[in-house]
Length: 213
Image (cartoon, rainbow, N blue to C red; front, side):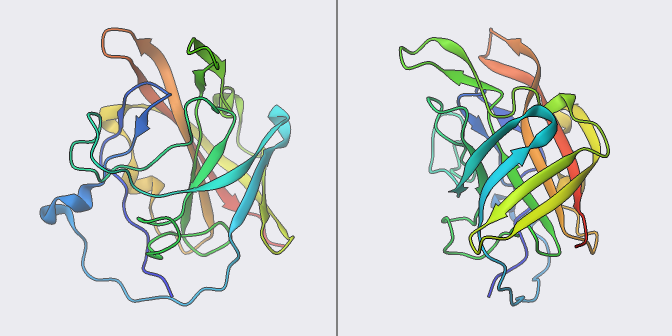
């Protein structure tokens, strides 16, 4: 059983691509939606993602919400993969990682979310190690995204749009929109790196839809 997914944020706060955090407006009761019916699902967990056009791929780790940090004072922010392994991608697997059931998995009728770094840190701590989504903005409508599942099946998604937005104008209403179709949104950093605050100024979002088999 699961509840419909959290709307993870109305705006995006990033502390560089090594410490990206996605605020959760549900922490503010004024933005909380009406109760949503519980939905049964038997969709297997996603295990890997591959972007054929870019010739990059990664296993997928489950991501929950952070505790309180300097970049996420209320603790309601989406985790990201470790900064020292920026080649690792992750999927939003629920508030407490597979425990709450407040997520959509790839393949379900709803908006699944996968996040990855555009860059990260080398073992010696130096910045600039390429991330799994370093070239994400090079995708174009029609490109394929492949997602492996725990049961051995593979899902095929088709890119419908690639967009770049300032963090303060991040389109969470569209990223988490229930369109009646299985969708998957990929998110990473984008734009210029603002050294004064240690953040990228924008985010790149790739919108996709599941290709029927």
